[in-house]
Length: 129
Image 1 (cartoon, one colour):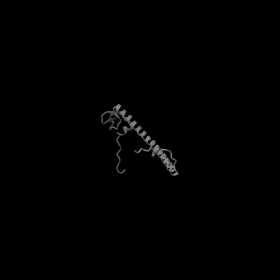
Image 2 (cartoon, helix red, strand yellow):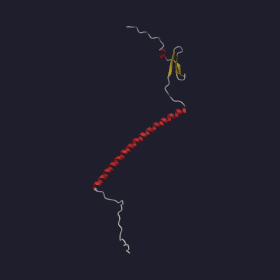
Image 3 (cartoon, one colour):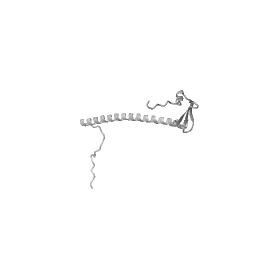
Image 4 (cartoon, helix red, strand yellow):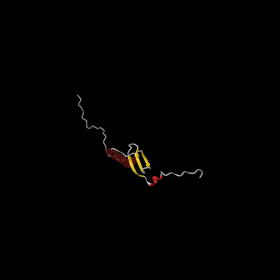
């Protein structure tokens, strides 16, 4: 019977992460990558500031809209352009403003001197003069 011979050594190859000195070409490539990365960081930082300012402006606008709408909801009314009729009553000497949507009188006051002049007859223009 043959006996197994004992081995004196076993050798196998493995990979380990270890420091390796860069060649001049590798060092130049890493320096270029470093500079490009720094430029990209600077660009993104500026872009982030611009975007932050844009978002701040958008939030400010939305906040103003929110406050305006909250006030409208709370009051149950809002300011709108409404058609109104103005009447110069020369008989009573009174100026009236009437809302056409509700029929409510908004303003009643005496006619001014200028408004009273509007009722005076205007001289007719003579043809050919």
